[in-house]
Length: 396
Picture 1 (tube, rainbow, N blue to C red):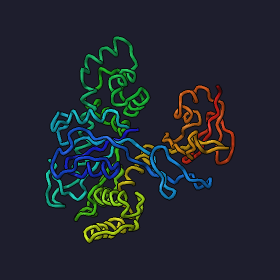
Picture 2 (picture 1 turned 90 degrees about the vertical axis):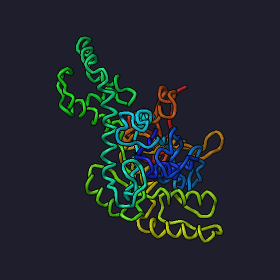
Picture 3 (picture 1 turned 30 degrees about the horizontal axis):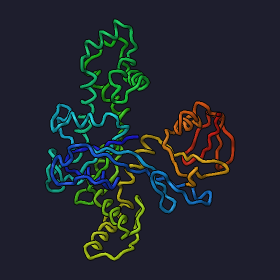
Picture 4 (picture 1 turned 135 degrees about the vertical axis):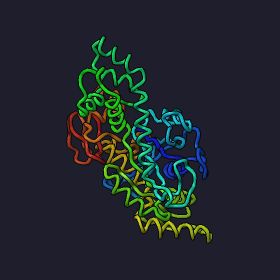
């Protein structure tokens, strides 16, 4: 699972990335502070299952705080995209290509409208953030269209001469963008495109490119800087204007401050929660900053929003579930770690899917599975539910 963090320069994209990962990245108030893509690990949050068994878990990856399990997800933060990126403006082609393998995207915008179309600081409210939502969608659609259109006439002739299936040929053409035959076939059917590929118009190709992009790069919008003047009003307006989009208000700067303070053990804070507890001795500046966050972010929005963006993307948009491997008689691994692992799978995954997720040998030699919570034996086609604990029984 790889999630790309994208957006215009100077909207707080790298701050959002650092707030999710605590990775050391350059954060600066000028366009193109990020040149090479940053990679790190973010986390989705679920209720851990350990307390249901009267145990304390020991995650091998991720972490657990007071019954909240944080499951790792890889993130990549590319440089800011500007209008015309698909034509190479602002090194756009390079940054778009960095996102080839992303399963989904987080589009960070400056919801307060304090950054213009070039990524330059302006007075809050003087720029309409709706333009950023529109421009990025166009850039990604044009990116797909550019690849699809490349050598199209020759491509169409080959399909006809060699009697290839259209969906097979398109999947091959766009394989680098995670387009497979099933996605290509369903998209062609949905658009009611004819069976003669040579007769497809440029408008047909543009519609196909757009639909393929939506299916292979689903997106959530992180409406950052919601605490600035005009941020709250703009967020409400954008949700009305873009009803088909998932938009979450957030303050990446606030989340980063909270996580940094928690890392230094100045406060106790669980990401995504609406409060924190002060532990250490704070100076006046620290107290003032934390009080601002509590009053203007956490009390007002019940969260900084950053964790919600990741959770909504993974669980609501990508329809993922979390499954724990475990044994009916033993929840620990060979090193004595309790419930050390937790895997993300697509909703409606089966016990056999989970076996293959753990290891190909478990899938190949699958005999049965056991629902550890109920101690019930299930078959390979058994549909798993979020937070199931499953033991896989396989042959030798």
